[in-house]
Length: 156
Image (cartoon, rainbow, N blue to C red; front, side, top):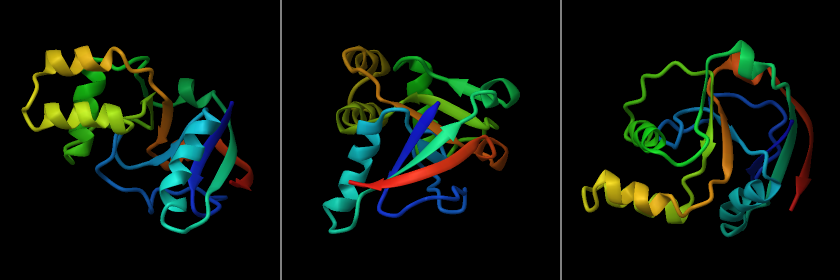
């Protein structure tokens, strides 16, 4: 499988040292099988006057069998609970890889309303059912990163 990572620099040697803690699936190296999603991730850097670089990798999917993985096939109650736990800094799970939908701006607005207690879980899930997830794959351990092989990068 081909995966992409959008940044302002080439990332030929992904690591966990540069990851933020309180994001969708916790600390890790984030990729997507959707090139256009990686381009959108570059957009925030380009708006700040930096380059947009998409790094491209080959992923050995045997990792999904060999390692401890968690997959969300849709926006669900479990997905919502998991990202809220991660974003609030309370993630204690031991997954090597987590895959599922990206909390883009529209989805994040719904998540924030729920997180702030302005809508209940039922309403949040009702709103999310109309959203089509863009897939992200978070590599949370070095063991997981060992299944990722850098190929090249492209400036966009």
